[in-house]
Length: 280
Length: 274
Image (cartoon, rainbow over all chains, first blue to last red; front, side):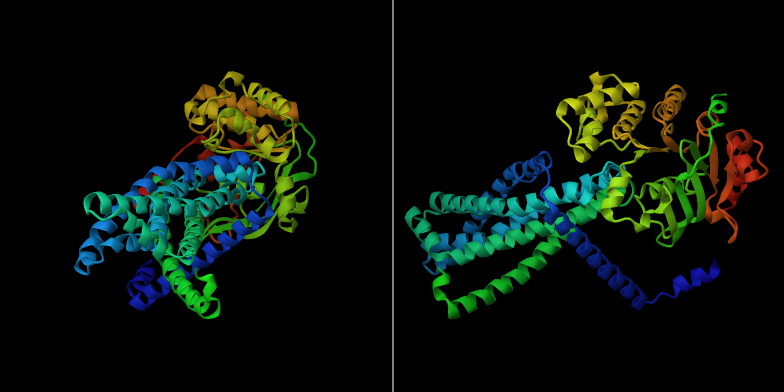
């Protein structure tokens, strides 16, 4: 026993770094296998309507209030924060352009996804974690249902389809919030607000935002369900799974956002050179 | 004694068997080289201290866990040779009553009992309803509770709904994981009676994991006792008793006698010394 204690005491920072790296690689590998199994079951056939509709309702309809409130205030905050700089350059009439481009390409998809990671992702991890702890996932298998097909595939479909739609809602409400504050409080002409808002944003920007949302939705579903399926024992395990689902989803959203932004920029440059008509 | 009426059954080929099965979770080994048979038609009890691997044994038998070493045999064939589809099909021949019943929280009693039927058989709704009602009645439950949610049920009712759900698929084997744990003595005996009736009416082979000495006296034809792997010497077998319920109370092994008599013995000193 004493020899074990001595060995434990001798663990250097290098050992700890090694353990962290191994745990990280192991975690990524496990998540990848989980996503692969989920995709396999997704291709095997769609889940039943009685399973998918409640999930769509939970992810979509019940997330609307939080997305509406978030979108509205983001739009108004953007108006407040941008106004001073634009006034100094006598460009305040162009406020609509910066609000819209910020929302469509970046803030709408990212903030909607972050809000949904908190609301939907944590709830999914907690629900699946509780099912695991109370042996309901084993019961599903015992009764001839595959837990990945029955529990994960509907949540993945719901997040993949509805998170982009919720991001569009956040964009629209944000633009309205920006318009309201710009015209009613800051005194900007409504015509100029919408004129610049519409002319500055291209279809490519809209598509970029939607594609980002698709990736964010997929990441939230896979990460949160994986945390739920690997939940530790007891109430503490479920709580930790819910927290990890949000934190890991948030990190995944930011990392994906960076790489997708770089990829979209590269694509834009290529399109401008090869097919400028495509960047409308 | 009720067991005397059924211990005289002729043993047949094993319907389930473990062959040199070991199972570890991380660095912790729970089961080591376990071998025993379950004969068709018998009711076998698996007993042992908490943490000795009884529930893990049931999940290995069901194919819900994979052994780290050794093989689980269904009707003489290793389940490791089966494809996922075959495993899925054959697993339906085994019913499982979970320790906490494991009813689906989001579904009412009716949907819980109907779940396996909807998932695996294309039956008209009227037939599903008649099967659900029949199995609720057989488990001593009124069909009027069909629209109650699991959270509205007592522990005994949850166990009986779990039993009805498992039996709705007409399994050949029933696995009961601590079926009387957490229930009052009367409800415990109701569950014991239901296990016996299930065996007698449906000719179902049963494996019961239990700590309950009343269950042990009343239900099984045969008993296997496991001892916690962490407290064994390196070459000591983990199965410390395999035999009839009548003989277990006078077993030669002091660990077996101590367990069935519920005596702390030297364990109390061990715990305080630790």
